Amino acid sequence: MLRKSLIIMAFLTLAGAGASAQSRAATCDGLWAARNEIYKAQGYCFRTQRAIAAFGNAGCQYDAIEDVPLSANDRRTINDIVRQERDLRCPR
Image 1 (cartoon, rainbow, N blue to C red):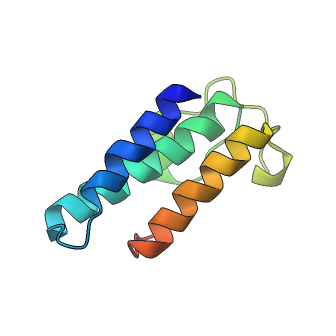
Image 2 (cartoon, one colour):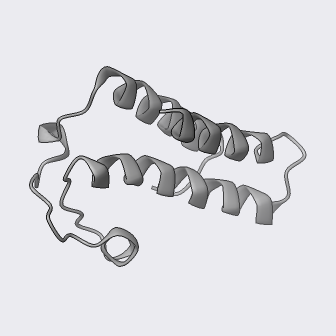
Image 3 (cartoon, one colour):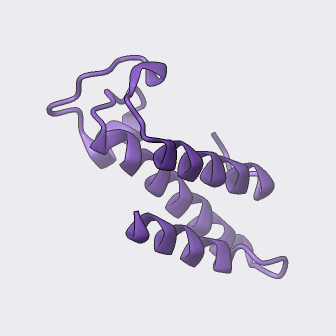
């Protein structure tokens, strides 16, 4: 839990108004990785080549993201990450 918060805070620091395009892209990539790391830990079966390459699907259990059993804290963290991705206009 603390590790996820620290990851998010580090990426948000880079997301300041004066962030360069390169740091913005790195921030978007980091937010994407942090969000999907949570899904991977809970057994989500990824569909995109990018996610499969990054996380694999070994041991996955859930094809539908809605079926992934997330704690309330995980849901809050994911919602925070998605909000930051939207604010930064990260590609989805």
